[in-house]
Length: 469
Ligand code: GLU
Image (cartoon, rainbow, N blue to C red; front, top):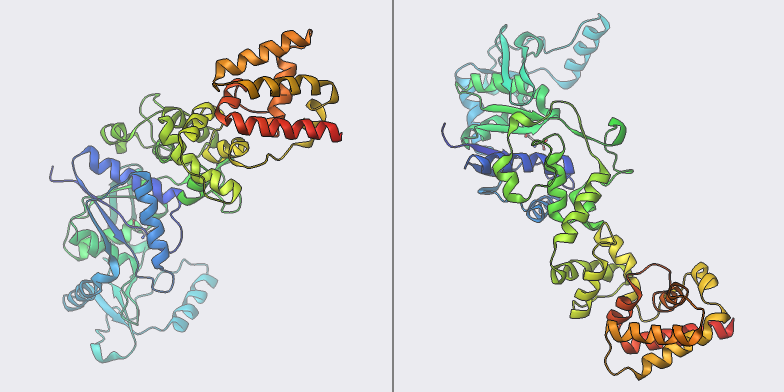
């Protein structure tokens, strides 16, 4: 087989939707698997809706996911000349014709056809009029064969197609000279030597017309594979209001790129019962024949599970680097990446399922003064515990080396001096004192990472709080 060439062809009219990201991922994985090439083509011909910001967002999203391309980003708007030249050629050889029907006339005839209980396709009024270039405002239509099946063997859906007679002659160039999507996409895919068009199943109904266009251009259509769209829990369409839908949303919620990539590749594709796929495995194992035909359900719990898996694998220093911006957002100022932050990250790595959750749980570490959770204070910072807290504080003050074991030793001393006090009954008030709440890593480790002076200051404040009552 000749070299495989795939393309990802987003329209830069919004954020990078996870469904599009998955399409990109499938194209990338397929190209990589077979040593082919991936082309990134930005379909920006809709001038009103395309924005540079959206294009940047799409590119950043792909880069963040670790999807690299071999050619591009190319902008479809740069190819306007070849789209126009193709239409001219088709007009000259009769594969297309000029149409003078106005939008109002078409609408009137469409309504009448529907009222008569028939399905509307263009009625061919201008098809044989041989209208010339001096016509004034006009569109250009593809001259479809009157009969014949426009079929293909879809890489995912299997045998697919439609009768030409059901489609009708469709507009390929607007009256302002702009090419329509179908024409631009076919001309560009041909020009770029695309061998496999892998795209969302929402484009499956467009394919017969595009096949007709290939034939009109005397060209072989590429292979097509349409991947089922992602649906949310219960088979519902993902909703912008309810679900995170853009790659950026997931990123801001604290998912790691390898986790999102792994999750997306597994939506609708499987390889035995393997769940975890790193980038190399995706690129060696992915194939279209294992893509499922039915709508692909996105399972948020699985994403959380994968995210935790990848969080656990990160070296502490890298985890700290990733956590710092989330902590920064949490407290509204920049958080430096320090050795202590790495130590904290190491302690927290199993506790949060996302970076933002981990940051929420680590807030106490970066604030100057903790926010006390009133319930935890009421339950654990009672007058009865004050003598033990004071004794601990005194013990800590004297410590010359601040280590986990030394901290534990002070705890044990205080406990034995206090008689019947149990470790848990002392650890919890200390935890509230230094973190504001009742959840944190092991108490000795928590104090160790917090440092001696901050621990002392916080215990002081807790004792004052009890005093004030
Ligand atoms: N630009 C089209 C879209 O974003 C994709 C075209 C195609 O893949 O054929 O839906």
